[in-house]
Length: 64
Image (cartoon, rainbow, N blue to C red; front, side, top):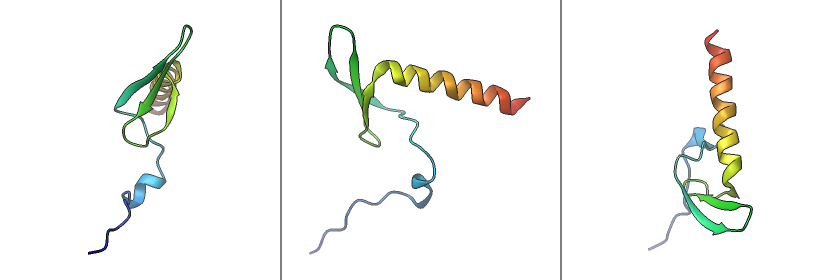
């Protein structure tokens, strides 16, 4: 039996991950780092908040 490598849906490469599910991987005095359970990217939790704010701002401008 041969195993296939994990493959993502074809359009997943075209759209950046929105990091819907994250887990905390490290905490420091000034920072908290999280890992996206979908794409496995690790980043500071404050970046996730910034992404959310930017996404809302883009959504508001597209509605107008």
